[in-house]
Amino acid sequence: MKHPLRFSILALAACQLSFAVDAAEPKKVLVVTVTTGFRHSSIASAEKTLQKLADESKAFQIAGYVRQPVVDIPRKPSKPRDLKVDADAKAKEGYAKQLKQYEEQLAAWTPEMEAKMKAAQGQFDAGVKEALSRLAPDKLRAENIDGVIFANTTGMLPLPDAEGFIKWIGEGHAFMAMHSASDTFHQFPGYIDMLQGEFAGHGAQVPADLVAGDAVHPANGGIGSQWDLKLEEMYQIKNHDRAKLRALWFLKHHPNKPEEKGYFPVSWCRNAGTGRVFYTSLGHREDLWDDSAELPGRVNPVATSKQYQSHILGGIKWALGLVEGSAEPNPSVQ
Image 1 (cartoon, rainbow, N blue to C red):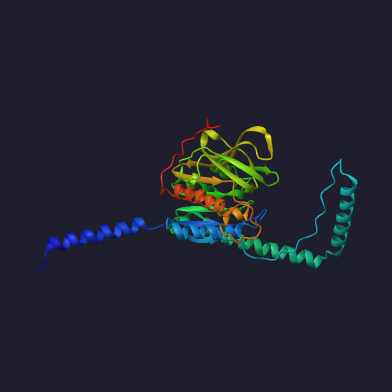
Image 2: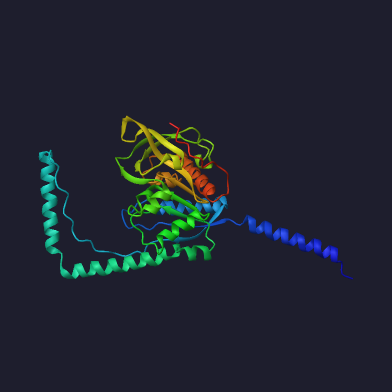
């Protein structure tokens, strides 16, 4: 004899278990490392570290990497930059050597080499477009992607629907970005407005004494009120409206001119529609991304690498809605 009540209870329990499993599934993100401008050597470290954080935290899974094709593009010789007006004799001597080398290389540049360069560039451009086609809004929705990470991207990326991508973020998705993601889409106002920061330049790498704008935010990484880096390339940022974002880390002086006091942004978060945006300008050096003690040329200690990983993991989890943290603008923080 069947027992309807028992069957109903078991069915309900099975449904609840299924819901719990579904709810616990990690968020799906895509990692974009395409560059049409300068390409950082730390991109390999960035991909390795993001995969490590995904595997260890179980909070998110990387549904794929959007990478550019590997194409050997011959480069036409470029003329050395003009000398400064106040150049000394040594600089003039060095420039003369560079100019002579340039002229010799240019003389050796043949029409066949020019044709090969154009063909290779065309192959590269087509491969980039194909890779970035995965960021088309309809494809992001079809794959149930929860967020996109721009890890050290640069240049004008040929997205299939750039405005649609910004709209997709504002519909309740996450955008997470590191370092030169602010050196991306300089000619796309919609992106700059979404990110609320644009790369304006940088000086030599320097030690950095960062101050927390929000010491309890997940993207603080549990580091506290101050964070000292031994060496990093610190960006200057423009098109940055503090009334539209929450400062997470900043400097109280120009990174390369300590005597110039003020507010110099480093990391922040904000709401974009119902979506969430997290950005950190840190991430130029491999020894910030990679916590391997055997990393060649390490200057920042392993402990600092682990802090950086906590910083970006907290930002990623916050942007994906997995942890709470304020996005209320805090322009009064100094």
